[in-house]
Length: 318
Image (cartoon, rainbow, N blue to C red; front, side, top):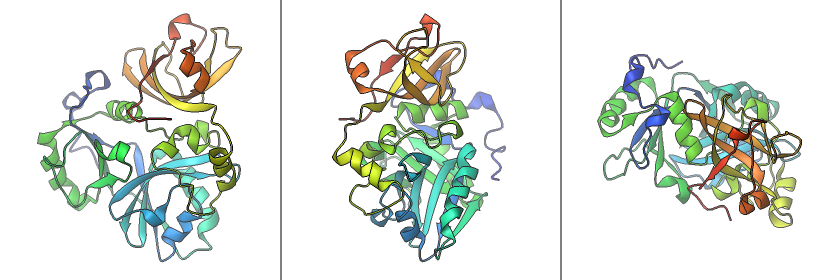
């Protein structure tokens, strides 16, 4: 594994969640993530038949969100992908999902001219709100989706290349703690699958169709029939919304959201949670669209002080 210690040896030097300010430039070490690569002449073809995003339209050094779904259209795991070379796709996954992702890939990759590798020595960085006029680098990974490309970039670097980039970026940004990094991703509306929620959500329920993570015109892939049917014939009754809540116990992925404090009527599910301050949390949650439009009350638990306050996502969801 990449050794972050020389760069993050003093917690006091990193920005904490409660110190984040809108519009400031932040450098986020993605210490809780793992890089997988799929390499070979069939790499793109293999992933194209397994995942929701369109790898065939992915330009070099361009990022896309995506999910790998079950035949029922439920996301087994989610990822951020990049075309690293003509025959190599990188998949950034949360460490808690790495084994699940590996197992899901290995079920099918045996029949393809492609290989899966865990890239243990890569350092992964996210950069928020740093204009290209201030910092330019040919290794920068840009999101293909316009909603994300303006303020989120990434660097996936080998150990040999990392030090020089860190030295160049550090004076231009503030370095984030792991908690602040999670809070920034949630505030950007970037939902991710966790072990507690594998095969729970449709990709549209993560808002991936708004962010380029679901392609409806690329042909067949696992779960495609159900995902496409919802897009063309159905109506999405729940969507991912951004909110904040004050409660003593941190909300966890998979926890329910209730219409009342008696916990008898679940109206939503926590997707991701990040700490803002003591007993104060940001959440992404799947929630009934009608209730959100009506501003109906929603609670995390039986305590009436745990009422969810809904916030505005940074991208349109209509």
